[in-house]
Length: 181
Image (cartoon, rainbow, N blue to C red; front, side):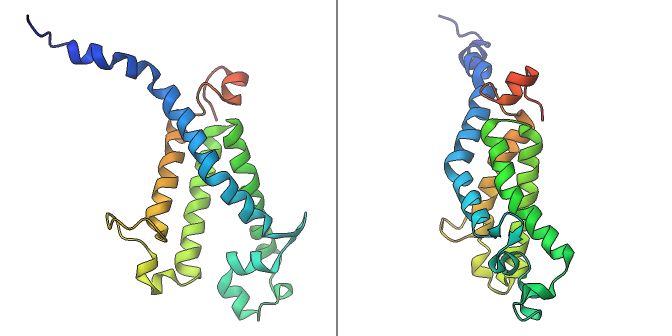
């Protein structure tokens, strides 16, 4: 019996045919299971009304400015209000788009940007840089409380969606016949 050199390729060919569908569907399912509730719950804590951010929202997003203003949000300007509202609505809208698979690539890219700003705020604005143990160390085997380690996984899942789109079970596929966004 002779072993053909193309035998390994024939063995993995079925995997190649389903890879994109499995990756995109799994990425959206994992995002839904792990992060959608997290972002929606976070957004809900930032609103006192439809267009009224909570005091906590300002303190989370602009910790140093709030401290300088004596935790009186009225001393902050229109810019601060606009950033807080945009960030809050992004926490509602971007996960909803990803769940539906609508404009998936753009929504995933927006979430990556959001997570980057969120992480910088946590590390710089809230003093995480002053406490290196909160940063997370790559390959340290400790899964809990490590901001950069956890968020690297979040970004990886979203990067799959940026590169591959929403997949076969998406509104993008229904509307456009392919994964756009």
